[in-house]
Image 1 (cartoon, protein in one colour):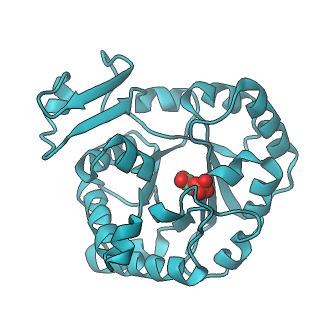
Image 2 (tube, protein in one colour):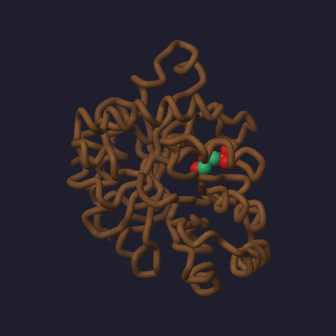
Length: 275
Ligand code: 13P
């Protein structure tokens, strides 16, 4: 459903030099025209990428601030003993242990040319400690300002082993659905945590099953139209050798690629695996 969508999440990787090489490889790659392509560089390199990368490829940020920018210095650590910023205190997020978030406002991201932001990535949920409500609020703010949201969901290995995959994904979907006013500018990325950076890709059938479940959830809880229009992309150890099989699945509408997106020719192969 919808145009095939491939995102490259560069995470916290790269230098000016390696990024310049990656950009030049992407600029010279031949890409299937009927695919939306987005890359998410680390914040500090977004400007470099925006100024050197072909307009054929859009830019995403890897995170964004929850509200309007202002007096929020650096990386903030919020302890459950108290908040150091009113804006966060006002959110009344239950059971929060700690949250780290990089301060870069949606307004600034738009100013430097971003069209998208990745939110709810498992590394922010499970390494940094962001929770469903917090992520939902960030998504709502980004959308309200006109940024597209790549909304990530996905279960941990133990959750899959306990048969809770759908429950976890639906809970994460509900948090987005409760917060966002519209799904027009949202792409859902299903990224099973056990597949991220492990080389242990989900089988095409495993991915397809969850994508169908998430689409059914949208149909029941949002609308038939949103269910059929919203792109659900897969992430987790996608590479140039497994993308074609995955792309054949009816409900896989693209990919969110980590490690393999750092290699221009391989990322191009993944983009071109659209069927
Ligand atoms: P890998 O492709 O490195 O497994 O990472 C996936 C991911 O987290 C994309 O957001």
